[in-house]
Length: 87
Image 1 (cartoon, rainbow, N blue to C red):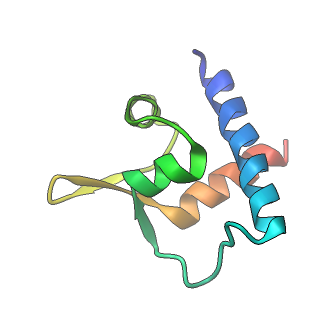
Image 2: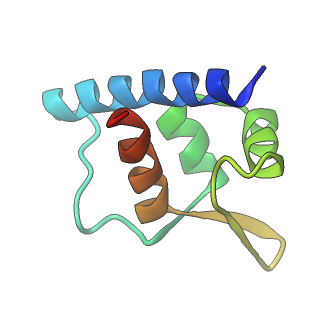
């Protein structure tokens, strides 16, 4: 799968998240954490551990590791998605 295909997949899943937000089932607020873990990333985007690993390896998404656990900066993930949507 190419980077373009991964980005398209992310955008498709973002559209689903926006639909859920519009219906009130998954609302994003200022109270959201600064960092989210892999479990929430998988839930929000409907992807597997392997997909997250591939995105990290290819530098598609930002991440950091703290005490053997990987976290993703939620604000940067949202900004990345928005930047891809405005193309």
